[in-house]
Length: 238
Image 1: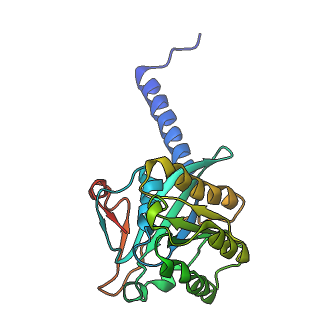
Image 2: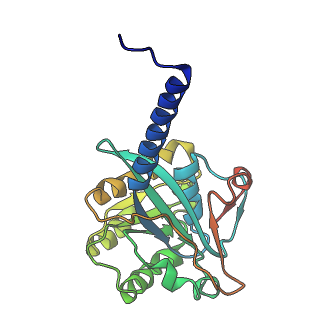
Image 3: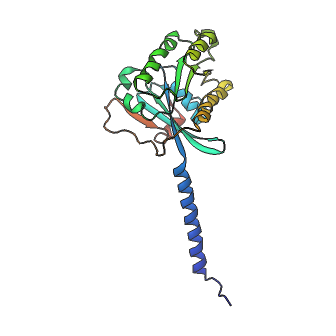
């Protein structure tokens, strides 16, 4: 007759099962694919507010100018696969971003070009932002999207949809007009990044987490959502 397992053996088996389960979870987490999306445009067009809305689900209560690079992450499900979108937002002012550009354009999977629909100069800057991408040898095949932000300010709109659509078509980009601030248009923000997520599903991702570059100039800072998780409940860097 087989002897029943002792309590110690039962405990050992339980620990083994828990360990194996933990290892499986860690392995699955390590296998999650990461895609880097950069958000480009002039200062004050609302780049960070768009990424904040998508990752945090609301518009920030406070806004300040981004100095250096800010990035946020969100896990999304595409065709039953969990993938991580890592959104990089950089300062629109040259003096804040010059030293960071080479890091910013490294291993990019998609680009979001943002202009302010109430400010013609921000729209007229789009060719120079596209040129900068090309100058840093970004693959022409990676997804690119044009976004007109602040369309809740209907009385001040300076760039009509037809003009923006012609520009988007000439550069083979889809156009989205949205508002990071207006809750009723928040689904448009979701659609922007989920459109990219579906396009990226079949792309080759980064398999390792982001590691902030070192030895940067004193005027450059890299801020992650994890590093400022608590403080971002009350502020946003735009």
